[in-house]
Length: 393
Image 1 (cartoon, rainbow, N blue to C red):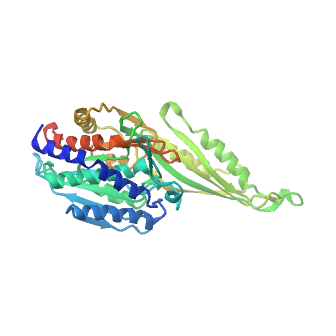
Image 2: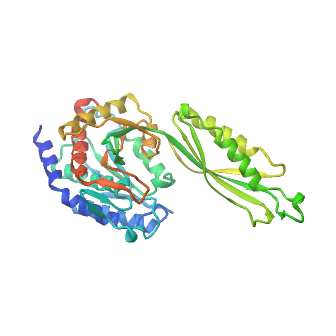
Image 3: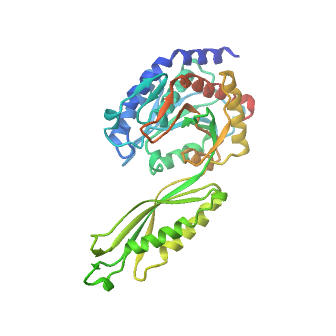
């Protein structure tokens, strides 16, 4: 073990209490995806930490959602100095899925070594971990290239503003570590499904359901037919699922429904499946099962799948070797959930996801974090960074 590795990992171990304190403050700060002020307040905590440790930051303002914060720590030149992909990226999102006021109702708590609170593992612990890994390399050096900490603000709704920033960063990335929560098993994620989130709106014609029924055209009747057809596209063997998870419509119980809406969640594994299934959805939306209805489809958000390239498989092996020094034995898992890591992988950057502290039950009141995982997971990422050069990545 080099003296730099020893210095970094020992310093990270000494920062456990500080990490927990930073996490408590962050969890107790509102930050739902549509609460730009709250997400940016969490961003101010990130910026204050970076300033304290002499790490410069750039801000890419978000028009509707949280700003993107880019922190940089200069590092040594890689062996392949002509390669434009030099940056070692630590990525994470500051927003949560919870409504405004949730931290007041359910503040950060620790019981028997388990921390609870909105966003405690998804993914404010990963944000804090990345902050401290950056600070360690700023303090002791040793990185084989520039380190970039990318802290985005709208992942939970498909990164509508963050995606172009992430993709631009991925084009310059040598590798990407996305600090989504480590799996409850202690594993990391080496593959994820892609997802498309869309809304279809149906126009019918209102009429009195008793006195003038035959003059009406039911948008809700059309909605029901379209839902049945959309759900029939599910193919579990191929990992393709369709779920119309939200519906609304109608004017009153005694009115033939003049309008209706459904919201679709599509998940898929193979990139080619996306266009095939979306093409079939467009056909369903264009067809009028109830004569006289009209419908439109709008894509509201989208994630690309995280697929494991040979270089990403090598990155997983490097991380596993680094984690073993901390007594961890992570395996790469496949997840049906989506994340920003799909965007970086699609840009050709070797990407490893869910390297953050271990937690589970995200998006629920039972969301938790294993506090003892903070330091070893931070040490594992730091050691993996130090091993990049010798691995050939």
